[in-house]
Amino acid sequence: MRYDVSGSGFGNGGSDSGLGEEWGVRAARSRALAVLRVRGRALGAATLPAAVAVVLYAGEVTGHFTGTGWATARWTVTVLAVLVLLAAAAVALVVARARPAVTPTVELTETAAPDLHRLVRDLADRLDVPAPAAIALTPDCDSWLEDRSHRAHRQAGAAGSPVLVIGSPFLWWMRVAELRAVLAPVVAGTGPAADPDIAAARRFVRGLDAAAVVADGPGLGPLRRLGARGVGRVARLLLRACGTHAAEMERGVAAAGSERAQAVDRETRMVAQEQVGLAYAGWDRLLTRVALPAWRMGRWPSGLDAGVVSALTELSRRDRLAEGYSSRLGERPACDLLEEPGAVDEAASLLAARLFHGGPAEAGPDWAPVEWSRYPEEVVDRKWRADAARLHEVLDRLAAAEAPGAADAAGAPTLTRVLTHLTTAPDGRPAQLPDPERPVPAEDGDDRTSLEDDSVPATDGDDRTPLEDDSVPVEDGDDRTSPEDDPVPAEDEVRNPAADTLAAALSARVAREDAEREARVTAGAAGFSGPDGPWPLCPLVPPRTGRDLLADHVTALVCCAAVDTTGAAPGLDWLDGPALLVDGVRSTDLAPRVLALVEDGDPAPLRAWLATTGVRPEKPVRLL
Image (cartoon, rainbow, N blue to C red; front, side, top):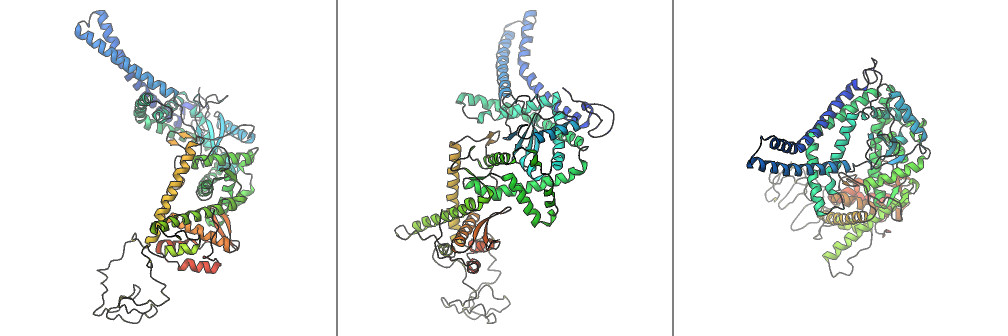
């Protein structure tokens, strides 16, 4: 069924030439026909042996193909035709019955969002296209139309129309007019989607996508899995043959929708596109810096979409380029189109935890929702103390390995213990040069003076410190090598062996805990699965290095000591996640001091910070 529209182009004036005359749809249909020709050629190749067999039998009946040789050829071709037809039938059956992957979403019925459904229907009427069959939300900063015409996904009253999937952060950050402008080109895609050729090509490609991964599904025996692998190879071969045409077809559909949507809210569209980029930045920062630590602690924030508003407001306050964005908050937000925004936000937040972390489908004792007001206490403080406990457990293991018979291998959970360990090499000698403000004691004939006396020239046996000026002449007997013979060490040279040893042990411990968590998730409630494997498809952040893990754990221990011995408190920064509040103000100068200890083995900056803040590193901290 075709849906005629007025105008020779999308949003342009002209004669009533219909949907088929529009440039974007014509390009998309031509590519769809190319996809269907690939399907036709595959069908022709499958029936070719049967056609040859029919010709041979017809020749026998007419007396043209007689003799022993022709009889052998007929039987051979007949057997080949039967095998090919059986294989083709198996491939066609698998492609037809394979369940295409769909995006996990939160369904929005018309009862739950009547104003939103009304907005989408009015938008479809203005664009003169059919309205989407349903509306759903996904925890992502994108919107698209999704074909759910397969019988496994078809909904009552769908009538073959696609489902409109909207990124949930858009509803909370965008205003109603901005959301309408963003959805206009997406809703306009329902017109090309109703074209029979485009719809058939899409069904064929989606069936091939699903058939290509049937062998990876559970519950298949060895024989069925072997057959499924053969079907998968054929499906991938057909996908390679029609992949380029399918991609160009989708580009044509997108171009058609974009061209048609130019007639809707032209002035608002530019502002709305800016908000899309801003929402994506805030959403990504919120997930990786704020939500991920909570998920790892067995808590899932129940108001992620409301949190993105706070994150973007904080971004607009810090970034001068975002000035003026916060003034939009006085306008009506798109979430007002929902009857119960809080319930929808909670459902979308739980779905985000499942998609990006692989959490259970329902809340429980070890997987509980957390409000933003409780985040510092239930997430930040628990995370710090869990990291501090892990750090001391690894130190206990290292101490026991170095001295198996020592009774005091396990030390008290103090910050002093970590400072001592990271500033001491495995052989017990200082890992770095001592404090340059104090005189250096002489060793093995070394007659060096303190660094304060830079004017003293080098004498026999002098091993001058590296900070001396190279212009000072070197006299006979100086055992220093020349700069040419003493090249500058490489940047990746090990500067703190104790930190490397501790970081390696800590990384192994974290890897084991992550593997155990994934095993529990796999053994528990089944998560989502798609053509690329089970959810989550990939972690939100790339794996951290051992030094990064060590710095995070040392920072957590410092924060625990600050909370236990001073008036500091855990807090939440909407853009950076867990934060330490000293006298009600976020501490921003702790990270470089911890890095100086971890990377260079230099405790002086961190000790100065502890003295200024009033933290007592010798007192044991409370662990989780």
